[in-house]
Length: 354
Image (cartoon, rainbow, N blue to C red; front, side):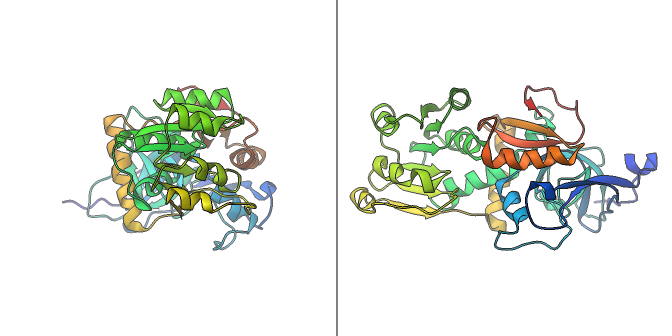
């Protein structure tokens, strides 16, 4: 197979473009540390690397923890955030695979240089083909959210087809991903949300919805849906007691989100169901490979249809800062993935543009 070289001319090369805009964090702290810098050099791909023109980037809670300097491992400064993104192959380093071509639409399952940028470097293995039926904004939702949901459902436990699965916090990025993966696996699925808009998103994905702001919602779930065999928990410090109240016998609670300590937890509830609680975080290379495979299959067969949430334009630092507030505090409500759009007008699906 012929070797693809980075000498293949890209649009930027032909146009004489050598610089780009990218977010840089130069000190740990609040959202104001996210600064859009101009005039940064466009990186060149090395062997088995790809340069991608980023059309949209996904925003994840973990990036806010790193920005604050509170995460367990911190990258060197200055730091460009972002592992999720979608765009166009700009150039390809020396590679023997021939899998990727300049101009190809792709989604990113990780990045070397960070996706909060107009161009980013990625390993060839991190670059996946994006079907024409999936927009760049949708493509930028994929890796972080669907990888997390995949590991929770099929890595930390082994969710069986036919299981009753409750997504406790089902309208956000991770929740909508978990609903789709569970339904694609043949499970009966329900999700909770705190607004009618969130419940509408859950229903649109083919799951039963419940409002977790009502006092009776646990009883409602048990009576109308049944005791869940699996609960994917997005905010354990608030919901764990309720999870144990409704868990089916020998069921599993998988914690993928928690933002504080938990007081007055009665573990006898877990004893009564003989259930288990497990945590889920990140993913090994093998787990990521399995998730990527299932994501690509879901995109091809239509079971994975990413939900676009609030979209922030990349042209100003304050917009990027606002995206970090949004992904934690949800001032516009929890619904789909928070995104940054680098090149407005490339995608046509409805979204909240901010």
